[in-house]
Length: 183
Length: 154
Image: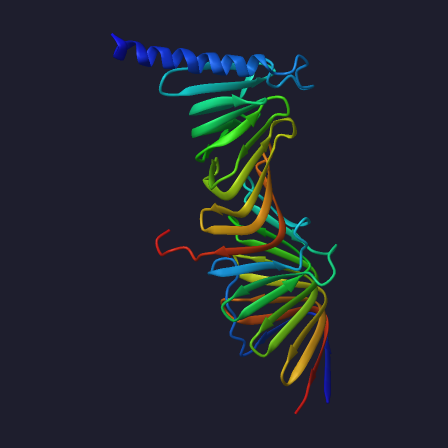
């Protein structure tokens, strides 16, 4: 009996922690109302957080080992983050762990992060910070953007999410490779 | 010292070993940009890279392909269309030939590089100047359009 109750109890505690975290959000929502109707569901194995803007899903985070800490949601294990653009396309972000702050709309992933976008491009960065209200992503710690046979590198960059445009800071190196025969 | 001035289309075939542009392996380097400033952006939807270093003293855009080096202050590169446009301080270095111009466009479909405005082709034994110059990379044929002047040394 005790073994059966343990998973249920853990799930209840996890759900309560997430609910408590969002209950602690400031009473006044962000000006764009982007996270006002965030929906949370959690299970013993994982949790899903969905953020909406004007009714449409703006972002979705799948992870586990989450807990609240002074207004931050600490994500111990991040499986995937999806950021939707206005045109319905989504960026898929993979990393290991991070921190989400609902009050300022900032998601920080401090370790190696991979972003897969539409148009067959992929980005790797040493650190990732999504700024919800600005609809942009700051990339630091070495950035690599690859699309087909073109690779762009810089130390720092910003991704303008809705436009799919990377703005690179500091020196930039680009390499492209010859198409192979038959392509 | 001799001078020529011809109006019309003139074709010149010179011993110029040129390499292709976007279709071959290559690298581009944007150097001299402060860490907190931007000298380039890439549009993933349009597959266009745009670099502009005019705001930074001493900064430069360099494109390297085989034996060819292109320098400019502003460069736009359409990666899927194999089209490149360079403006401001355009210099192309190829073995013993140096070409400078206000503007250069490369069209991958025809394998042609078009140089526009104050074009100077400098070689070991002479130089040509004109306003419009076309280099066919594949055939190694060079053409000046309109008035141009040439000077050779012994």
